[in-house]
Length: 434
Image 1 (cartoon, rainbow, N blue to C red):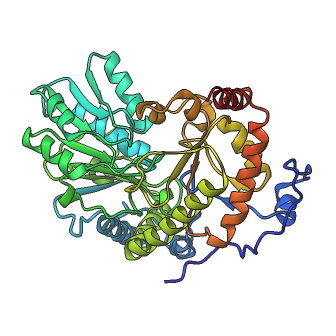
Image 2 (tube, helix red, strand yellow):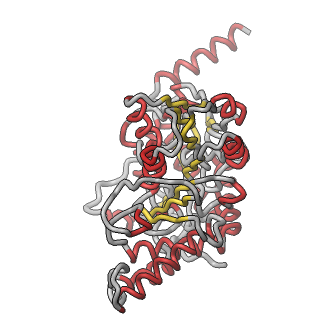
């Protein structure tokens, strides 16, 4: 299958060595003069052409309300169920049957519906909730609120690769545990959790298990039955679907109370007229991702590996964050020693290379990453971290330019770093002592 690029990116010209680019009148003018290279596809992906084409009729021709009893509601209603089936296929729920798939406006909303919904339903009595220390803030922040209300929140530690030890979960489970929520994969360092094993431990104690699969869906195989999860959240904008789309898989027997009450839409679990065009786009993106899952993972994983090899050959003092091997295919998290990550990000942006310094939900907070802190990364390395997340448009012939700019930027910033000069001085003194 040939992947379509939104731009025909030519091999970049050799720019002058200075890293300060001229002030352009507009972004359009800048892009005409210099090429750009996006390595921040976890922040957002463009919609595929097929996705956009599938959505358009539901803005215009089939604009009806799916809850309407007359003919205008028929096509939108059918489209919703077709999209539901497509998303179900992506996560291994080929026949939803009595299980449910609830459309939401984001994975964050799906996470909130899973946690707050099950606690509000109150089917299982107790006050303990178990999660991991590296979850997305849409899990961690709501659990902070529950902690203030008297809930016992257990945040399981992780190892240096970001993995949860199943034995730790087993130790933490008590008869007061009402929910376990552990992500399928970490968007910042790419760790893929042993969800099947973790969920089996929770199931033995008859404790509901939720997984946030926003970073994993569309990139690694997911099967809700094989995984044994009771709830699973995902987001369309992570696999070339439209922004503002998400879904929550809910296994039969799991009772939730809605966050948004009103009408009977989404089986009564999310009131309000459905955003049919966006949901159609989510379904089509899920279909495309499911049909080319292995090929996408292989292609992007190959780019990631070659970029990693090139960077570690050409840029001294790099540190890999997260698991050395088994990780999300579109994830490369590195720390550049003796350099501030935000300064790196801004300088690379001047060179037309777009990266992030962590999760897009927290990168503007200018605080050290809770994920890097949880894996035990020293603050000086955590502050110099960069997340490089390639996409379907990434091309291997662009790697030399990216590597060259990274080497120049790192060298420039290191030469301004007192820590680096101290390191050189200590190395020289040690050499003299020997």
